[in-house]
Image (cartoon, rainbow, N blue to C red; front, side, top):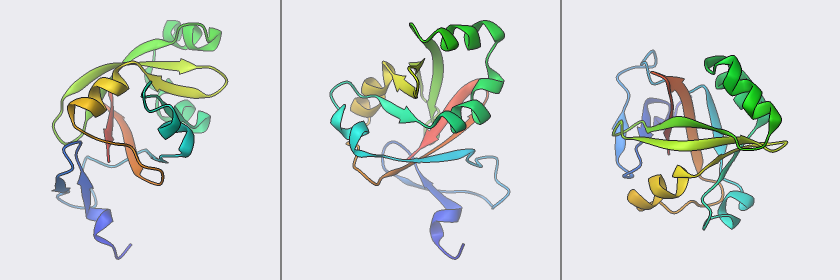
Length: 136
């Protein structure tokens, strides 16, 4: 807990942002470390999300209809994903293919911000204001 990481986050421009306090509203519900398969699919720009994280932090905010579409695993659903640093929103597809993936707008978000994913990089997520907020 003694690191500055607890009180800071990085937006998608790579700029360090300070949280106002440990009780700041930017608490992160879950974190994801970028793994080789995320980077291997770089051209497609998809991010794998752990089933537990999606079930606990995203599904409770979805309608029954959206949950049913996900369960069928055919086409996924569109969700809003926001850059925590800028508030910019992107439409992405959440797909359940046995594991959960964020697809579609991931390429646009990372390309617009000149972000190259690296193995071991940490991404933090939380759901608020009808969107999945994330920060590098």
